[in-house]
Amino acid sequence: MQRPRNRNGEAGITLLELLVVMVIIALFATLVGTRLWRNVATAKATTAKAQIETFENAIEQFRLDVGRLPTQEEGLPSLRIRPPALDETKWKGPYLQKEIPQDPWGNPYAYRMPGQHGDYDVLSYGRDGREGGEGEDADVVSWK
Image (cartoon, rainbow, N blue to C red; front, side, top):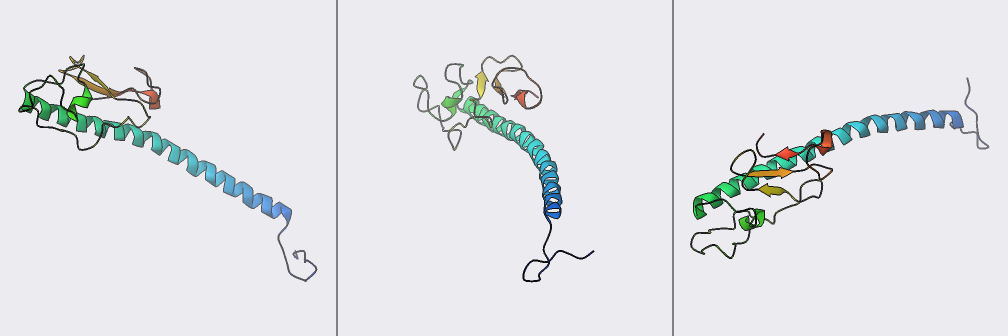
């Protein structure tokens, strides 16, 4: 089969061939996009778990220096800024090098003291920002 030629005598592609190529590219992009999207959700949960572990290390250092855990009212900010009620000689912070981040979904981390699963609990409520949930809405917690 000969290709159609334009006025200059050069062969070109047909509209049908162009549409077939575009459909193939769209299918490939859809396949790759869905796989990447799943990886993003997993990466967010992994990031939240790593940040919670960093908070746990800082809380334990706070406990060693001060002799107690941060209270519920002091919360995670006490790892960066000395609570006014604390003696300057005991608090040797800041215990975190950077500001306390939001979780990967843009919500604040929760700190409970006393904890329901240990001396204290640190958790992210996941994408939905509410306790419980499944998949990307599942909580990321310090006790698991």
